[in-house]
Every structure is written in structure tokens, then in C-alpha cells.
Amino acid sequence: MSSLAPQWLFGAQAIDSAGNPHLSKGVHLRLFFSQQLGLPAFPFQVYRLNLGQGAKAFAQRTDITWIDSHGVTLTMPFNVTPDNPVTGWLPAPNVATCCWIEVLAVPTQLPIPPAHPALPVPAPARPPVSPPPARPPVINVPGPVPLPLPPPWVFRRGLRVDAMITTPRGPGIVATRTAQPYQLAASRIDRVVVTGRGTVRAVRWMAAEDAVEVREPWRKLALPIPLGLRYTGIANAEDEAKTRVIRGAPPRESLMDVPTVPNPASAPPIAAPDAVEWLRVDTRRPELMGYLDRLLNDLSAPACDLVDPRDVFNEHAVQVGHFDVNLLGTVMNGSVDPGFARLLGFADVDDTLAAPPGEVICYVIRGWWDRDATAMNPLVQLLLPPKACLDADQGPDQPPQSVKNGYFDFLAVACATIGAPPAVPGPPALGAHPPARGTRDPDPGFEPQACRHGRLCPQQRPQFRRLE
Image (cartoon, rainbow, N blue to C red; front, side, top):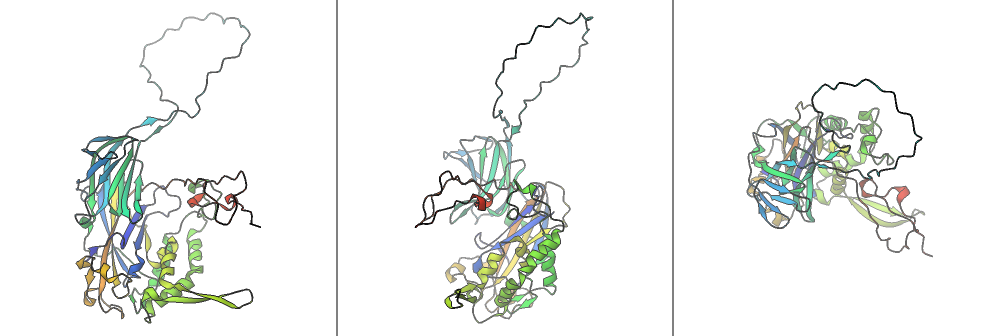
């Protein structure tokens, strides 16, 4: 009865840790769902499928429309040049939902000339020397002709493939590959954009509907609370949550803690990453668990409307204001942190997988949400697939006490190619920007420099003079 969730409602992403110094070994799985759904009513059930080398048994679809930057429809094979990128449009979601695609292309290798070619320098004058004494002639024996040596500079590959989706803010990139194999994956891919220089020969992709398979779940991702009025979990929920946090502990220090290192691989390793990561999460866990307990057991209001009232006092202990902290928003914002996402069951690491490079692993995630606890507009609910709306007696066993009008039952699909993760984002480019309002121009000579995550380091921030 499950149905693939709309892109804006529920999705997932999987990535192999190969070549990433900050990821623990394995395939990292991350779930994303809208705050309008609220917290799930049951643990997420994850099904794992091995699609084999290049997913050849599943990726059999080839229907795609290629259009270059001039609006010309192309037929494979075709060439791509830097001044004319090509976009491959996949079928609409009502036809099929692409979750994995491979662009069979051959990049054109171009030599990179030296940045500063050496100029001929005249040899200094030397004093004349006497000729060497005569030597007996040397008889040359004919042999194989040596091949010419390659130029002293390296070669570059000339293709980049981006998997893209359409968002309310415009097109967005969900995965990028700059080297063969050009295999990309996401819960939904609307189109692929090929830039650079090379030849596109063919394409094949897999629909998410073809990966859905009913069988025993590989793993359950549960909230760290065993039971609640709005939730039915598992008995050892707290132990499982701690295991997930330790399983995904990063082996190196985060870049925000060591801003002076030149690149991620230069971050110093952590001596005991398991203990350090759990200590970091555990010190901030009590407040989050308090919010989570209220969201699952306080039936005085819908979960999306529960707040934590806070008073604001001045230096004289006099109340000067008041504000409310939305509990659901706080928990969802906290799940942005990978450690807390694993604590809440919104992320995990597949560290038991023994698959050679090139194999494609598919994860199908199933989730249930209480229809009464969602904050979705009733008109929007009418647009959801009918199969996604279940009655209260059609869900898993032991339904929560709060469930009266049934569930939303959604699926999300995430694939990962072993040994071929997507390319990491490049360093941010930060140019000059106008000063903030109410301030004068920064000191002369200040030049903002690009910093990690697009922010300015403390030593790079401009010092504005206060207005007199």
C-alpha cells in the first residue's frame, strides 16, 4: 500500500565514504522529511537491495530527451563543448521517478600548458677549452626506437555531469560526477546537465518504482524513546540510538574546530572518535530529549503547535520580554547535525556491507506518520497519492493512542555506487560585498577572502567604525 513520496515531502540520500576523510567507513544514509509531516508514528523500516555491478539488472530505461543550450534536440552519440552544455530531460514523475542514472560518456583529455613557460636564457660566455683526446669509434647496434616522452604537465578530464531537480527557488544540484563512471543517484532526478568537452554515447537509468521490493527490513531506525502516546517504538531504543551515534563517529576533527587547516584531509585525526562523538552528543542530549518527550506525550495541542515558553530578563532581573520556542522546529533543526540525526533515527551508516567497487546498493525507506499530527493543509492532502492514505487499522501493529484518522504511508529510495561517490563541493568563491546598513565603509585595503562554508573567519571579518 506504500507510495513514493513527493519530492518536497520525504526523501533520502546515500553516499559511499570512499575517499572522504571525515566519514566513517561504510555507506552513509540520510533521511529528509518535511516538518509539515511531524515526527513519525513508527520507526523507519529500511530495506537493502544489492543491484549488482552498475545496476545492470535494474537500470534498463533509456528514454531521455537531450537539448543543448541553443534549444536543438540531439540524438546520441553527440559531442559536448565548453560553450554548449547539454541537458538531458527525464520523463515526468507521473511516468517514472528516476533515482539512479549513468551517462555513458567519454571525456576529451586536453593537456594543461605550464602556467609560466620557461623563457630561453642565453648561456653565459665560457673560456675556451682544449678538445678532448680522440677515442676509438663506437659501433651502434640497431634496436627498438624509443617512444617520445609525454609532456611534463598533467592531463585533465573534460566532462562534468550534474543531477538536478526543480525547487521553488530554482534548479538545484543533488549530485555531481567529474570522472568516470558518471553514475548519479538521488530520491528523484529531473534532469542531468553535461558540461565540458567529450562525447555522450548512451544513457541508462533506473526508476524508483522498480526498486520497491517487499521483504524483511534490513534495519529499523527508531526515535530514542521506546513508547509514547503519539509513537510506538522499539524496546531497546536508547541503546540503538547510542550505537548509531558511535557507528557514524567522524575519524577526524571537524573543519569548524580547526579553521587553519588548508583542506579536509589535513584535519587532525581523533584518538578515540567513538567516545568523543558520544560525549559531544550526550552533553546536549537532555534538552533535546525533553522536547522529544513532550512532542510524543503531550496531547494538549497538535505536535506542531507545542511550544516552550521563555521569559527575557535584563541585567536587573526584570522581565522585559517573552517568546515561545516551537518544539517540533527545534528538534527538526537539531537533526541537521549528523550526530543528532543518528540519535533521532534520521541517519545511519551501513558498516557491514561487503561489496566490491562498482556495485550499486539501493535502500528503500518506509515511514508512517499520523494524519492528525501533520501540519499539512487539507487541500494539499487531497493531492497526495490515494495509496499513501491508510486507515487506522491498516498500519503496523500496536498503533499509538493518538491515531484516530489513519496514517500517511510513504516510501523513499536512495542508491549509492560503491567506490564512486559524488564529487564534493568546491571551495566557495566570496567576492566583495557592500557594508551593512548603519555602518561606514570598512577600513581601506580590506579585501574579503573566501572562507570555509562561505563564511568569513574571525580574522577575516571587517572591523567597522562605530558611527559617532
